[in-house]
Amino acid sequence: MSTKTIPAQTIKTCDCCGVTIDRQNSRQEGKLTLNAHALDMQGSPCADATRKLDLCDSCLYDVAKAVDVVLSAARAQQEGK
Image (cartoon, rainbow, N blue to C red; front, top):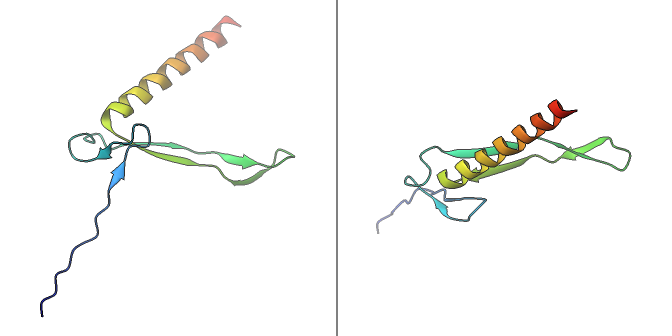
């Protein structure tokens, strides 16, 4: 009798487009973490609402671009007030 041990394998998928993340599309190892507290009806924090996203390289680029657009628009709006 022989025993064959197969190590556990972690397979990640992009939370944006659903592609399997591998060495070819995850050279930047993109992750986005949004830290937040869930609030109860009185506005007090009651739970963790943190979201952790794994992203492939192309989605990481798109998300970073979208964040830059939103932040620059917010800055422009603040300067306009």
